[in-house]
Image (cartoon, rainbow, N blue to C red; front, side):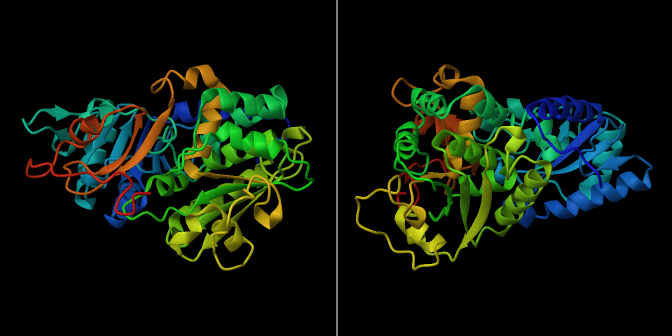
Length: 432
């Protein structure tokens, strides 16, 4: 199928307007959570059954956003909605209604009442302990205290659609970085934002990028650590599955900031859906001209590869990870030197985790001052958590830095099952 290649910044702006008009033209959207948890609960069967019913009733539907405006019902596989305790999840737009614990048998009623009749299926919405119903996802207590920046698009768009990502403003931050900013200006903006590594160490991202930029080397690398080995953690996995282009966009910007032209995403083999979605995203971005040679005619090149880890926990450590990419045993090495000086293939390397890269595009697009409005003075921004264990509402959450554990456990998590709180492990069993 012929499609427009993004050869210039003007092409991207034109396609953004065109694809947004197409997205706005859909009469309704059914966003079915296709994250690993909901898929295990049968969400793909719901996805297939909804299409069958719509076709039986001669209601035009589309699973991929078309480039031109079209009056259809979008049936879409989205990323993780976050409320994993209540999956499989399904949201209906433009109403914003969230249906919980949906079964295949519910599909007929959903189509008849909601898609055709514009009525809410109230038995499927969230109800609090007093029986009060919450139709709107945004009003559910689990979501109300959250602030989604890194998870902005997870559960909001089709995770496999580049057209939809461009429609919601995707790759605009790359365009700004390539055409409006120097490498030093990008580093300065990230430094000003006070963004710290979200993988556990909390090292200032701007400082790390500045160190790599300062290195006099023809070859430099950008490496994304997707080797999320902590038991019970699924933040990075959900971002790779639900918003792969956001990860790619953050890495391209890091490349421009440090004069690096090659990137690797290191993903644990236990994340097959993340590998699949990232592979689709890289292929589509490359075909559109958003990855590869001379991106948007800017003179900047950046290519990206996926490397699958074999499941060794130690490969989450930076030097062990780079050794694994090189084909060696994943063994940590003594520091110094740091990876910013001698990293992948002994070249200067930026190594950040998935969540860190997902924070980069909005910082570049909206500015460090905007980002600094979230969180306390010395630790701006948000943090994603996998909320698991003996809590009423398990799931994927993102809250401003400075949010208390009490707010996380009781306001968002709905309290402890049985009512007796004993302890909480931050970072899970391994404390990572």
